[in-house]
Image: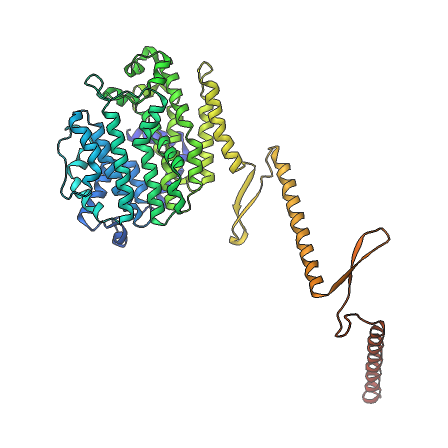
Length: 511
């Protein structure tokens, strides 16, 4: 994209320009190269510095969010990502025969304990081949990780490598990449290449102590996080994959729309059918959205939340941008830079992230074609995201900072027309009255316990009333003559004081 295109985008989307300016001014981006960060990033160590460079080389988008994770967890995730990128490079390399590829995939986790191992046999055009060429550097840093992290990373590398090998084994000279047939096969493949990444990250989060231990056991939600991102990438990269002889869209989807091969999807003459097949791919990806939202509500560490949330909202934005967009069959479609920055600035808590999901789901729903065979299913999928958001974070409630820095206040939006607002207001009023009644009853019970309120008497209407009585050392009753005596004493004292004042005046001020 040229500079003129960027200027034009900002002129036509001024809120995104504002977001970019705010990002440059206010966003506190972690600089791993600063000496004060060395105790956790180890950027001063040559092997670790090279691992950070390999991260930048293989992923520009993920590198940014990984570096922002606080403490030594960023370094751990960096090594984890580069190791998995090595596996992915082996799997994607169409120049490697299965006789070489399969054993490497199944044994790469063992190379993590083999100092000095590397591989220089990848195809010259394989963009991430350098990770394998310098794998000995990655292995050296893996060996320095805490054993609790090594266990998680090695386990995921073992599972992923074997899963990739199982699918690669189905390939033939005619189909270098094995076709994915059913939706179940598609889910399984995405689990191996991305769902396991989510599972491993959850294990690392829990092991670090930055998240609660039970997060490591949330395998379904972790898997859904990975599948949402992976299926978005597969959907978006259709043109690139077809051009390079790869095909990851399941036959169950494109075959149902009358295509004999994935190459036919990029045929301009069949654009309408291809768009309907693409909309079904989006439908399949959207079924993981609410699980992803559930997962993010479990996170408590802000930097971990940002690391998870930012790629998720980018995925939703990409799905919306590519939905019913014929350009995906001609080029790689991406969201605008300003839009990406705007999403980064907003993705700071589960409520705002769910609203982002909801807004993009609404946009997808608006673009559903009336002739789309999946019109009803797409409407339901978008409605589920809307329902999840409204259930957890009702839109008629406004949240603001308390006065004087007194925390967060939640109140009903006075301008809302939502029919639920009066019901919520009544529920709030009832809750207040109940709390007031309970406080009153507790106060009366305390007075009874202390003997200040002794008994209940029934009046003429049959209602019970508390009678206040003061304690005495003897029988805890205040005798009437005591009251009379006190009154008389007070009167006598007042008369005496008055007489004293008159005598003083007459004696000392008498002319």
